[in-house]
Length: 302
Image (cartoon, rainbow, N blue to C red):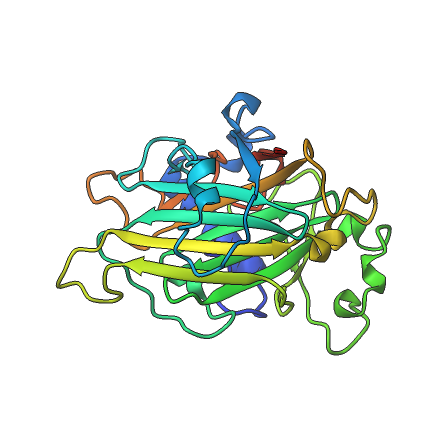
């Protein structure tokens, strides 16, 4: 999601300005938005099937397990919940080691310009996911080059109590740990308040790959789109739930909250209400940082 001009610029003024612009564009003032900003019935559920064969993270989504699990419903507009002019689907798998996420993105002209880790790829077309726990949430973004932008957000109210403040990579008393205050993008009245954003931190164990069905950055032909394949190690998600540790690795029947989204620089020219942000479940506002509206991911066994 388009959040920051720079990784560690002060974002308070930027976020406020962006929120005001988006309220005008979408016609949704925060004062008129309840919490959560969408009805519970609008929050989708998705089943994650347990994998039966070894997975190869190459972006192609051609393993039999991806076919077996099938596709989600197509993404809808993040704000309005209306259908979008291009299709986006996600599929989810799991085993004792990893959570596997696969995207199928319809895109007639696949483009990407940023190539370095943590470049501002939210200025490209990208896909994203957020994995939520009790104490915070992890954000992951990737563009068609396979460039990754990620970070961790910890609720300030949980930062000390959960014990994450004592982890070396999140200890804000250390000079090499960079963090900043975060209060949302288009929704700055979350009842849990402020978050610490650790945007210089990366989940180094994650595996991700992209496959382009067409030609990248070539407008002279028509592409079908691109696919993304990601493996997230369960063992590295423990920091999300230190206050109330959960099963890691998880068990069949466990439920996680994971948001799946896509952000586009090229909106539907025939639809002035296209926000440019699409998601499996609508958020009701221009903001991905609301875990209470994340879809439910149910882990299914054999």
